[in-house]
Length: 153
Image (tube, rainbow, N blue to C red; front, side, top):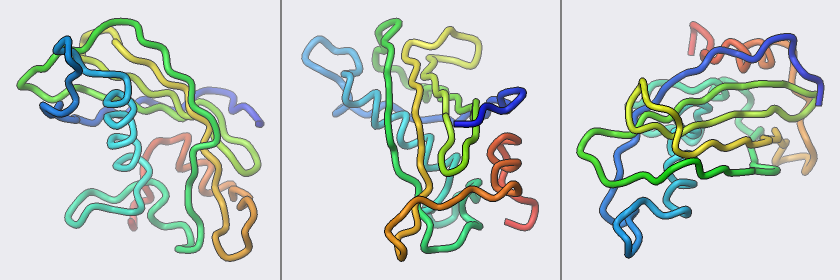
């Protein structure tokens, strides 16, 4: 993976905790933490988009290209308990390579809180039609590092 000179900016997404996310002890269980990160990541990257949701960074790439999780490491730094306010999930692209990129995520109880969960994920873009990885064009790499969908999206 080719590392960018600077990681992209962080973007934040609210994700509500659901009763089913809680384990027997009353805190958010480890599987639910992955779901919370995935929900924010789908909003950040896009496709499949939720009707009426803001467009994601990858919503403008060809429809035969999809994003896949190659590897994900999770560090649990603290417990998350049920709260009425949504968690704040941060997303930051830290590197872009030829066919993959690295995404750092954090789950926080508020915008100013330290992350209780941190994930480092390697995402691969794949061409569903050809059955192989899809080379990331410079324009898409720039969008990933800017953490913003294109203006025309």
